[in-house]
Length: 174
Image (tube, rainbow, N blue to C red; front, side, top):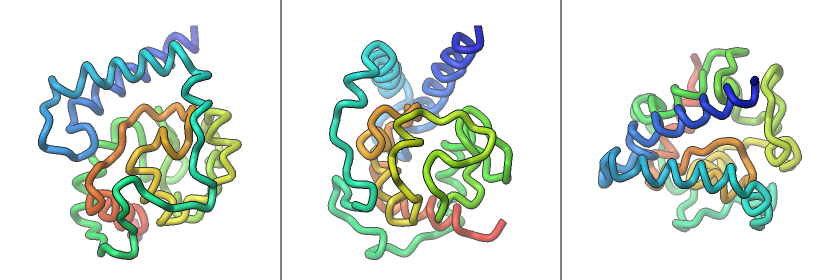
């Protein structure tokens, strides 16, 4: 029963995230993104082995698909707070407040899979990643690329500046 509730919550979160803009891209409408998000969730649920078989970048690698680096951008925490509203359906920035996803309070510098009280996927726990700002920048571009088999179904933030801004927000004092 617990797994069924978690699965339903995950599906609801996926649809909510798809309707929230799908990673900050204003080019697609929610109705265009929702079917793709649902298909991704269904495919990932149906074939978890396929999701974990893709080769992830090394735990200390920070290369991005779009070739940008965090160092080439200046993050805007105020804009990052706006972008983070997409994340709030699953994540809190309040210490110890885990939701569908773990609390992101103090995430910069934290070892992946280590937030107390949150049940992580084996892929995340065993990734060997420490969430540096640069690694988060890479991860936020396409989470499933960086941690294949992660429970997080969010497709990512395609705009490099949005990723830099969210990181600036996460690093800002509360």
